Length: 487
Image 1 (cartoon, helix red, strand yellow):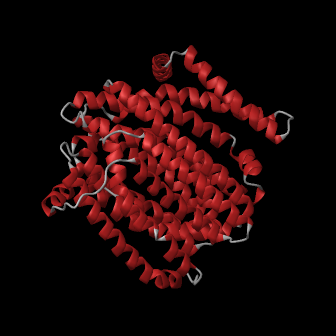
Image 2 (image 1 turned 45 degrees about the vertical axis):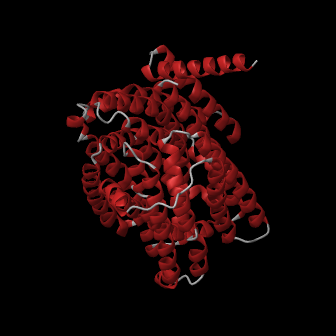
Image 3 (image 1 turned 120 degrees about the vertical axis):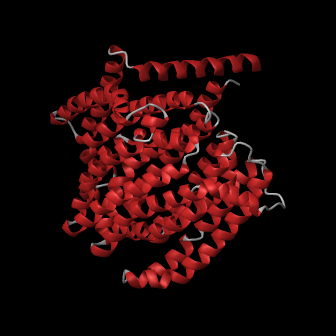
């Protein structure tokens, strides 16, 4: 199989996996949001902050080191597996012992058992992490599809049943725990690689020479992203935190589907071309143009239709999340620039540069957090778009020299998508004044948005539109050829 076909095939599988899993998760979150009180979501969000930070030590950077290394073998993978597993057990014991301290800090004694049970995800991550790196390195993303979908559906059933039976917050805990556990189990059953009785401290040091910088970068990024939630949980109420998180959740759903799909395929593909900067530049350009063509209009439509969507889907008790949702839509609309540039830097092997960028970005972000937290949750949220723009410039700056691809050139590549998305957004916004029921208006807005965007793309001959059509046609021909061969 040619490299282009292999990349396309894996991207489709990864995209299907993310769409399927997040689609099911979104439906389940709607059901649970209707059944449970917002304060339950606020409590889970608070606990998840601590487990997510701990999980960085298991996940962050090491998987990328295994993917990026040219000649990684069983000794590398096995050494990292046993190290990861040991670290995850130590971290679980640490957070188990610290659970009462965390609960006392927030004056919420009910957090103790929740923290201790939810933190079991750390051990699950320690078992899963290297297996995921193996799948990514060998670009067999079909395995992710089956493991993620199976786990998501099973966990959804558990979560809904427990919510109906009145288990409250424990329905959310069980859903998260079963999702990770079942996904890991299916991955182990479908992927051939198994850890061998091999261990090399020397190989670990080699991997850490690249991976520790990404680990620190990931830790800084995670702590920074979760800092707002920690502050909101401490200075304000669980309900405020729940509304803030719910506003982030819906646009993040779209970003997770599209951006993660591209991200996971892009790094191993770029890493194979690390000695050819021009090829990496072309991949970076294509990634920015294609992902922005998909993400930009979705963020615009979501921002325009936010209020009727939330009212219909989540009910009126979640309407306070609408302003946050619109703010996150703007911030996420430019994520293609972040993802493509950072993957290019990692693929070239400049994890040192990656770490420096994270330190600079987070310093700016911390200034924004600490200068706005005194003025309310909305003030903290409003600082996000400004920080996002500065981060775009910072992330793209090194590639001006490394790839001869500047930030202005990247914006120029995104400009057609930005213009037609904004045009479509204005037209879709005007449709809300039609004298129609809310659900009908929402349906008309979404349908009209898709028709307008695709129509303008075809009329104006947008490059990304033509590229995606060619990819779809190529994939259909391949499927047709395979069907004929089978017959």
